[in-house]
Length: 138
Image (cartoon, rainbow, N blue to C red; front, top):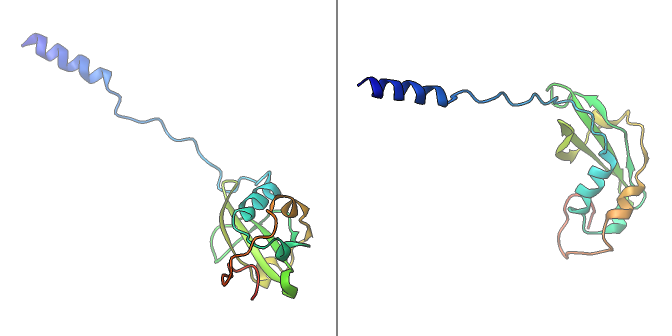
């Protein structure tokens, strides 16, 4: 019996039921490589390179979107097919979490710069007849 009690108490000591705490992640970590991140992200989504010539991008800015806590957002403008499209990439912990249409309230004050990196990563013109993925018009 004494052996069973000692074995049980020794076994109890060898099991750590507590897990180490996960390292805290800053939800507003500045997206250091935002231009490259967005260019790579869009290169996987875009079908027509011509739609994105002359694209413009803003530096990251902390903004509240939809009344939520402020997060970094990057505003973009595309002028393909003679129509300006305004988009916004939203970040959490330095990573893109959403890519959506932007409003004048969200990106009206953005300081746009040429987005030349996009033209370098987007593949040559490819079309998929009959599909509009929210970037170009038909």
